[in-house]
Length: 131
Image (cartoon, rainbow, N blue to C red; front, side, top):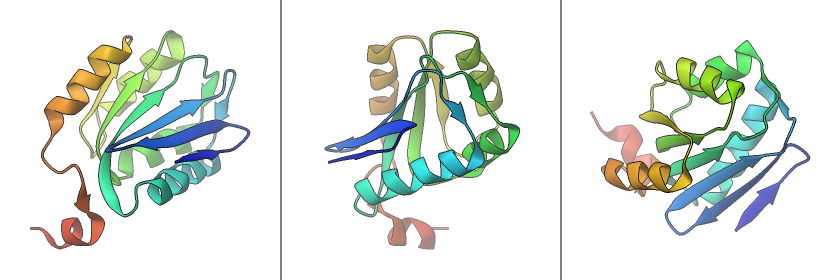
């Protein structure tokens, strides 16, 4: 399954969500919310790991960063980047409520996501009632 906008492409491959931002994208809070809603729809109500490709992203507003850090709809998030913007995202992601890590290599990111295990594929309703 896939979802698209002028700013990103999102897909669900089995038990893995993927988000690819378009080159030169300027990510605003509204754009980040739109991406999260598309990913939520693709997940089928499950809490899945997310692989985000930030290569070529030109900017990220402070509101978008804060929203991304606060969002808890994924079991883990692996960020892949290739430049200065990736390093900025990596720095702020240390405060995320969801386990989040930054990589420059997709295979390393996928390995890390597979090692996170745990809460992947738990229906959101069940996860919300856990204590």
